[in-house]
Amino acid sequence: MASSRVVFIAISMVLLSSVALAADHIVGEDKGWTVDVNYTQWAQEMVFRVGDNLVFNYDPSRHNVFKVNGTLFQSCTFPPANEALSTGKDIIQLKTEGRKWYVCGIADHCSTRQMKFVITVLPEAAPAPSPPPSSVAHSVVSSVFGVVMATMVAIGVIFA
Image 1 (tube, rainbow, N blue to C red):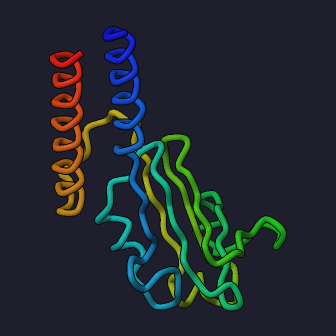
Image 2: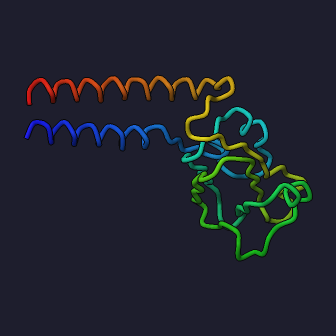
């Protein structure tokens, strides 16, 4: 009975720690996905990893989101309209590492209003290049989470 409890707690720790390490990156933060925001600067201040999510919040009557390649990104050219994300609350899970490009396909929003950005997605366990302040806070929270979970396992073993 006690050993099954310990196994359950250990499995829970592994599952919860992987969930705790994934981050939701709200594109444009408080401003969301809209015109005249410096998304290049926003993206440079973030560390993106496999398993993280990009969260696009916007007015769907004014904007959309396309995932494009580097060539389409540079020319602000878009795939067919039916490939656009257009709910106003789109979440893209970053499933693979490498460069990713995103643009708005409405009017001149990409070419003139700078509604575009590129990111580099790192592997899950890769060390981040000099993390920004928000990533430091994330690391502290993850460390505290690990300590709390280890304490729970110890208590479970002691009182089992």
